[in-house]
Picture (tube, rainbow, N blue to C red):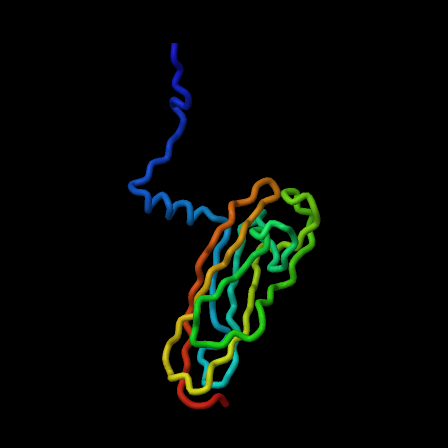
Length: 167
């Protein structure tokens, strides 16, 4: 005698693999936005890039600071080549110190709205125009019961460079 396991249980169907992949992206508990700190910049000026991660209630991600031997725990931001010159490193909104049940220790984490910023300078003589600024956020999110596998999420914005000097 044979029994069919799962008979009568709900199933999920997708028209294509692309739609399945899109459904997975929509269910991720993190939304990412990127924007320059100024609407327009001029040659010789500096500006900040803001990368904002918004996590669903109950989820957290880890600080940029390395806190474990596991390289995939710390959040990391990778910048693509750009016309602008990066100044210093990434800054993050103040993390919370919480007991992480997954890691079984106190960790620096972020929940809710997280802001990452990076300072850039506009090279002297950069022609006016619209320039892309993009990168990839490398992260893991957890809800104190489970963690996602390491993930990557791209971000992109544009910076408008105007003619003339700042002033």
